[in-house]
Image (cartoon, rainbow, N blue to C red):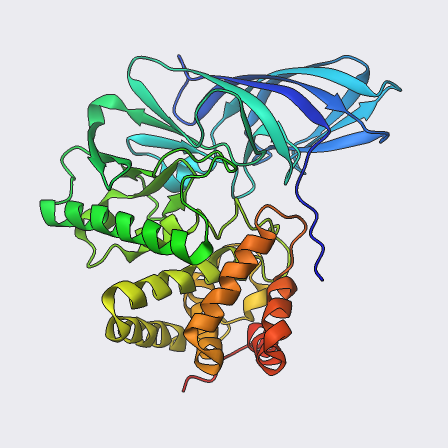
Length: 416
């Protein structure tokens, strides 16, 4: 029997987050936040806060009743120390300057703020839940997308994402599949009608497939997801796609011109399998096998179901070809050793190939069922380890569980 500790927070209450974008340069915010901290018998409480040490937090002011604090820019941490009282009221003001993710996605017509890649633009205790009120003040030239409705919500503390959009640079359309889907495209770079229809069809089909597989609808009051995804296509430097709970961000160029848009189905799949539900931390063995490889394989399972076995097999052969270029070289590494998302070939090609090998052993339906049960059992749980997934495979298929462990820790793969 597996016992899973749900991620809960008793330390932070009454959290308000006021973000001011008026008269702020690109990749800059002025922030005021306030909350009550319950030390729960501890001497101190650690919160994630900050980004690159050379810039990120300027003009920091912290007023803490019944506590003291220490901010470490190197460790991206804020530690509050109890002065003996059980609770403390905290008010913070600061300027967050030069968001590092801006240099990945930015220099375009949208600005994405998220708590990923070691960037924490507001203080929080990771892998806990908070009730938060968010207020955002904007200039007339910008509009806002947020991962949640701005009114008070019980949410995973690190899951707030914001996108600031230049109004005059974007074309906004609305469709129903049957729920409302909003689409923001960069004016002058929009896709053609065929690609637009394909996006809507894949959104509808992907949501239907994953909802059925996981036994959990896309829209979920429990997870404060109240609508189908909004798509934000950007013209920044980075081609990365991102699932941000309330919206999906992706490259406009890729969307408009690439041969297929299967990666957007992958982003839809992150509603169930990804960093906001499977709470394995960066740095932990197998972190990105759990966060990404499982979801990429399930994206392939959708393609197998929707387009047929031949299209699935063609993609598997493509993955083999791409992985074979690094197989056994210095660029290859065991899947469990990828603890930050910096080796796309290992995580998005080698990982699914391992899972395809397992599926050929025990059957695709059986492996899909195991992945579904893994989601239902571990979503929102912390701590989580990749061995929890291996153990679930081993419960019903001990020899296959051993094979999976071997393949996940192998330097290279035999490609047969």
